[in-house]
Amino acid sequence: MSLKPATVEIPLTTDQHGVVRVGGARVTIDSVVTAFRTGATAEEIAQQFPTLGLADIYQVVAYYLSHTGEVDAYLADREKDAASLRLVIESDFDPRGLRARLLARRRIAAG
Image 1 (cartoon, rainbow, N blue to C red):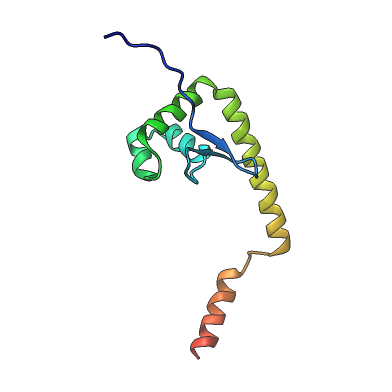
Image 2 (cartoon, helix red, strand yellow):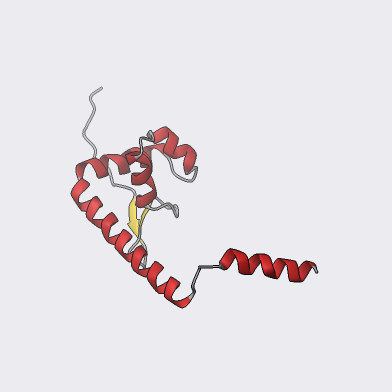
């Protein structure tokens, strides 16, 4: 028996918001790559995200290792977008004193 090279499709899809997700799951490439960068093995990532297949995780990690610059640029853009959104949310709602306000409401409701 001889093995024939196969072309493997990387299990990445981009949703309507431009977010890259792994397989048919809601897990983002951000999550998988971050876990890998912090030293998690593919098996540990599969435990963290049970909706992902082990083969898909290995393929995504291999894709990341082969396209590090592109993936890192995508992740940097996502971080910038998140920071911008955080500023918008914080400008609309000041989180300072939130805990004190919630505790005061709890005391009044219990009261």
